[in-house]
Image 1: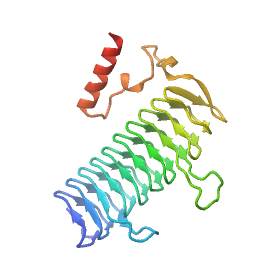
Image 2: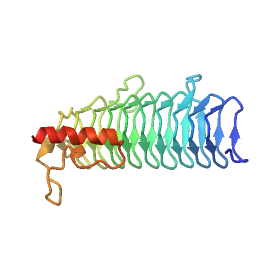
Image 3: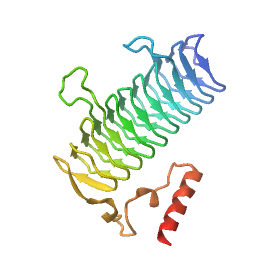
Length: 250
């Protein structure tokens, strides 16, 4: 299951059924869970600038597409998926089913809850915290330097569970985007966003509650999005959401 052009260190620990594509490199301190598929021209366990940061651990069933680079010193739960040309730095702790779009750049020392979705070209600054079931759309930047360039003042943003950060938004250092909130496209988020609120504009301002947004077809409220959007989530999770909203409508 290892292409003859791939370079795999004999000390790497590969689970059953792992596939390594052409011209990929797997360094010594790498653990790949069963059924993981690594595309062509990837590098797994790239050495970190800080030196020995520990192993790269990737859970079972991962799909790492071509030209992706995963540094040593990060841990990813089962069912990781990346697009092409993704960079994942050291110090990342991610729960299961993290999906990362093409050309994303995760700068490390960050945490991700389960079932997080990052579209293409997302930049996550070092020290960020992203809760479970978060959606982050293309060209979003989570910053971490309040006085760029600086040394030693970095503080990451926090995106709480079920929040949505829309295309081309920028979240400034230390800002907390609350549970179930919506950051509208092209917003500049300078202050904390309360749970369930809409933040829009430059600079971003609170524009109301997400519950006041209707679906474009008029069939009902757009938020909370888990009321109507279930694609790609485990059946037990979906059934829990259905029960939650059936109870709230009773």
